[in-house]
Length: 285
Image (cartoon, rainbow, N blue to C red; front, side):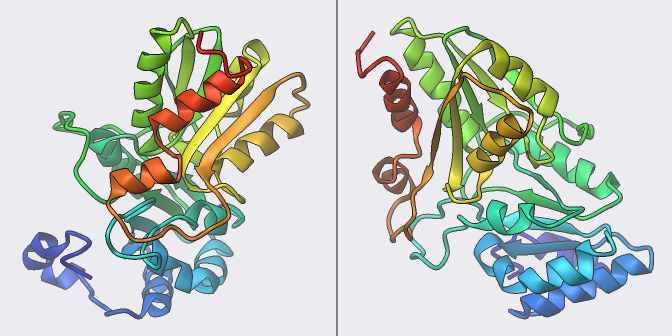
């Protein structure tokens, strides 16, 4: 998929470093594992929905020996008018159960550039998951710097609500926070950046202070990012909190425009605001 993954220019400039294996996803992953075993740093660019075909190869050929393969997972989340087979809504679940795997998702195009640098420098399997469509419009650093593995960032602070989001959903969380402040609900918004490993110290520090928590992801809820956060809090002995998870329910998402689907399946800023009001018994405060 050189056109769909945006690799036409790379293939023209570096023909001896580009391999198009067609739709043989299992072969692509095992081939990359072999290259990594010989000291190379392969990047496997595959749509999220198609990478799941190579689950066994990722687990056995890459992760068991912790080969430094970078999975550039395109079309993560809702992809719009491609039908239910093309939405990339299951990757967190099928990847985060694998030992040695690191999973990250950028909030914008500059963070994507930084994560790619991070992934290339990391000595182990990395999944870098990003959405289809245009970026947020932020400037990209001329020399992107790597991120510290497993470290999130606090975008804004408030004492009423804790919103922990990852990937494209961070922008929806920021939008929701801006609207909630008009209703005198002030949120702390955390950009998790990493689904695995989570920023344990950051999340637990704020969860100990703010007991109303919302997690946001463009992914199925079962086994996803929100589940990972809940597992973390329980494992660390955190109590006294209420947590609402925003994500795709137990269903397949149909064909349609992305913004319409995000609204209909309740993974947009409106869904976050609705969940926030539910903490206050539905009162529009």
